[in-house]
Length: 299
Ligand code: HMG
Ligand code: MG
Image (cartoon, rainbow, N blue to C red; front, side, top):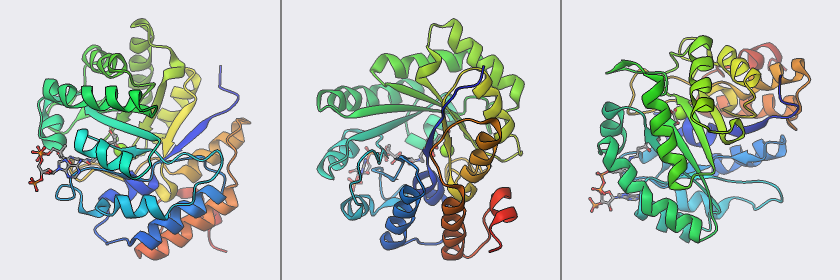
């Protein structure tokens, strides 16, 4: 059965802008997020408190947080890899964090400069301290379906890695197809594997990149399996600087169009969202990757 309502976890400002070669100023980021909130999105992943040497695009995280309007019902989660990041996030007044692990050794090394085991050791005090401080904590798991260096992922080991994040105390687990290679059968298999491991579907979210054009089909498959939190990026922005073959996320507009067609509630005003995407595409100097924006965005 399909869920009656879906929470859209909008990652455009974080996953989207972390991968842009164009330097996007804090004023544009702030305005992007303000417009997304005005379009009805309530979970807006804003930025990352990571090393500015690793991700210079998001070096202005504290400045951005200070500039964002606090709106009732609107959350601004941020990525945090380690205790240094948590300290910075708490200082910036953040209420919501996400840690991000890899399901494979190769990507853990490239994205976090850690082995699989070392990444969990790094996250343990982050989650413990964040929970003690009353923050909400999401766990991302990357490379859940395939990895550029290791090939197709093994559902059993992905499930084991996901369990480790939940056991640390994450309230939600977002399953990432970082390089966009998954197809619906794999999604079905992985979600079944988590179910067998005793993880309630309500704790799972999906995060599909659209490299091979499968993101929307994969999302539909996850909805059919009962998942009701879906990550997407306005205008299909996104990618990971440490996984060369990663391209944009599922476009939020394309997701909203599908949810409308299915009669699933989401709370987003599609026209306002499309206008925001067109506005952002102008700032970035290239057209939106979203098919729905192309169809509706003309004027
Ligand atoms: P490291 O070099 O091993 O870190 O990197 P370190 O602890 O040795 O510290 C090195 C330097 O960085 C030190 O400074 C630290 O102070 C500083 P120095 O003494 O050399 O001047 N530093 C920091 N500064 C600010 N904030 C911090 C911080 N931490 C250390 N938090 C580290 C390890 C984890 C820091 C690094 O690998 C890193 O920042 N990685 C981030 C990678 C990233 O952001 N990737 C993209 C997000 S993941 C993604 O996109 C996937 C996702 O979308 C899901 C999917 O699609 O699958 C979520
Ligand atoms: Mg991503």
